[in-house]
Length: 180
Image (cartoon, rainbow, N blue to C red; front, side, top):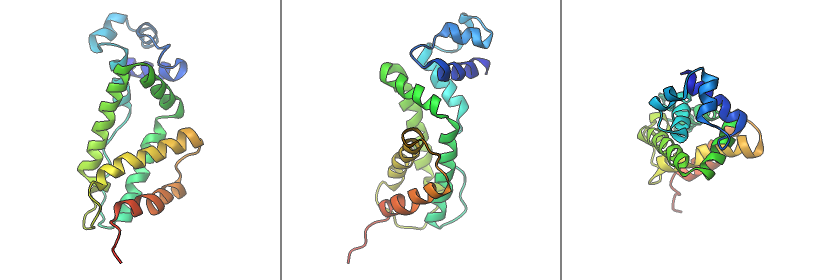
């Protein structure tokens, strides 16, 4: 736990490229061999720290109303992403550009998280006709909008933004267009 906490702390402070196993070991109060016994290298260690930090199970939604299910799921997702902090996201994005191993590890984590979201789409709400691949579309679009809002726009995904995502973007995309 101390090693993973030290990894995240230093990742935000110095960035991925300047992060070293030696500095992590020093920050955690352990020797380098201890770190290497548990993790094969820097990319694997950073991925383990990210996985340790974030829970990725959407809440169980107890409604058949698609809009309510989407609101609850997007609010949960926004809270999960906000916890990551801008500094951590920036360090991860930069590291993914420079280290193919880290990019592969982070994509593995993201695919796992997408799979969780698509297994029980929108928290499990049922009963509405949706476009084919709606759950996968949701899993790709909703996090992208939230990360863009946080990192590029520099604003939180508050209740009004969540409503905008659901009402103006997701519902029109996920429901099939009706023929006239």
